[in-house]
Amino acid sequence: MEYQDKSLRCVDCGAEFVWTAGEQLFFADKQFKNEPKRCRACKTKRATRAAAPPPARERVETTTTCSACGKETTVPFRPTQGRPVFCRDCFQQRKVPGASGF
Image (cartoon, rainbow, N blue to C red; front, side):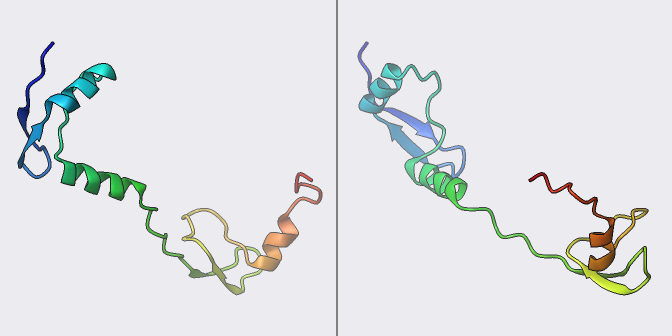
């Protein structure tokens, strides 16, 4: 089959781009079924965005009262309503001995 250059429209920016006969031959060799949807610039921008590491999560520190001893403590999460929150000492005391898995 003889391939000819074909004009396509980018789904992201709406610009027209040329899908060359050589690219069409490559797609046929790889048995790709769909035509490209994005121009080279948008495809590169999309790939760069996907490869970037996710933004660092903001560390949350909440001041609350320990459910066991009643002293004020800071925990590295937002407490869930109805669930107890313990200070470091009370949390360590509640750990089951030998449950570390080693």
